[in-house]
Image 1 (cartoon, rainbow, N blue to C red):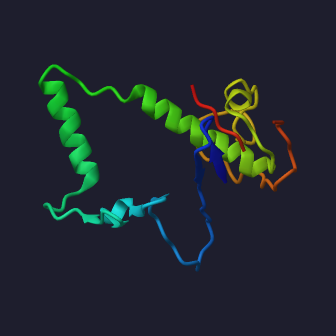
Image 2 (tube, rainbow, N blue to C red):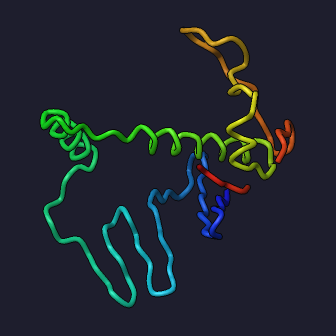
Length: 146
């Protein structure tokens, strides 16, 4: 999956959901003067750097910061960030399931519903029908978030 922003910046996202395969869950940022490995807290290159502080659980820290912000009367509001992030994932899924390039506007204005196999309700749903690239085109991988 390739996401492309209006300024030409590209993000290459790869994943697979197969048993028995090598796994690598991290974010890599490549630049002209170095490379950052986000979850390993390091930068290699012209100005190498490694976080040497106390190790923590990032999820716990996120909760600690949120609760502290609420108690202080200045709550952190990541609502916009979270909705854009969720829409990026939905856009990526639409593109990979259809094998088509999809723009932000096409995805955000789409009338398509999630592949649920029918009406949404609580309880067992069984297996949703499989999808393969190109089998159900939605039109229009360029990504132009607002």
